[in-house]
Length: 482
Image 1: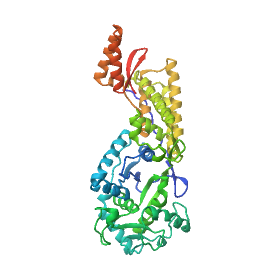
Image 2: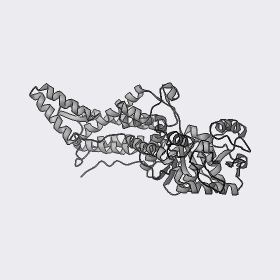
Image 3: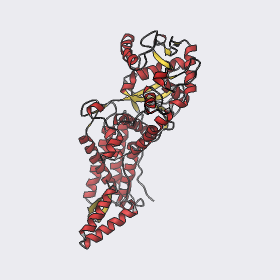
Image 4: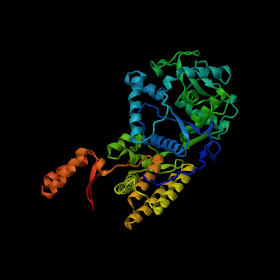
């Protein structure tokens, strides 16, 4: 058996660090083991496409690091206790778990639809309450935190001299910005309006039956505390990469840095990465504007999970993504062309054949360029352009009658290498369509030859209902997944 000897170039991976505001060569703390914390969903509702823009970017980062040979341990938190989830339990007269579990289940169904690889850990905040209580107690003991008159515990930002270094805001600006958070989340008795809550004292009207006992009194953890406690418990006191959306930079990630480094006395995160917003028709996504979409909304409109993934992925993560249905339709068509290209090569592929030097040279050149682009801060636009260049060159060989069965197998192998990073392509052969659909196609063809148009149309419609199209080719008809 002869295969194309395609190699992945060994390249330094350069990633943009939000804290330093420049690209840095990624160097894990421990050998080639990348330990990554990624902000996950708050399970009070179905995740929307803005959330999934971030989760797809995080998946692209994970896949890229694995592509270049890194071992990855990823943690994605599940926020199942906060103001929104508690409000939902009160409105539904249910327990916290009864309210959040359906949305947890839905989240995992959604990420499967989008081809997002499973992280190694999905900690739920409610499973780490003891660690959070210990975390708060240590901060009190080290005099970074204090208990207010209402029983809540706060972190004193005045005690942490490096506060603001991620967002690059000055202390007086932070205090002004913090006033909005006070109104929106926690109106408590603070020594400083910029201080943030670590432990919220129990309030029966606000919290219903949701609380935990602690040395500071009954209550629940603050949102910022949850992430630090889970990250340190699962990944250690210093993380290689922490990822989230730009709206997490302040105050959430700024507060994580302060409490974590005060807790451990060590650097919390070596490299911070943040994705920009998704907007809809150049406007902020909002239910009041009627432009708010969950993944499920798009699937119900007939789009496939891979169409949505490709649309969310093809714009660089640090660039704002403007969602339109025209753009989604364009992504769907582009992806279909690439899948058709794969199928064209699968139809002639023979892994026992020897690929030509011309074909292998085209594949290796574009694989090298693809790798260089992804190693440059996940430059997805450039990476995709090299795949398109390759398809044009290979199709020219097809059209000139110069492709061999060995070449077809080599091209499929190259597309599988690209797909290790992209996770969007479909590798299906005509004969891999469900048996019952192939039988319908045979009946449809027989009916057409007998001019039984009613039966032919019936078989065609049944095939369409199952998500397949009938395509006429020089070699006859075939089934193609929509």
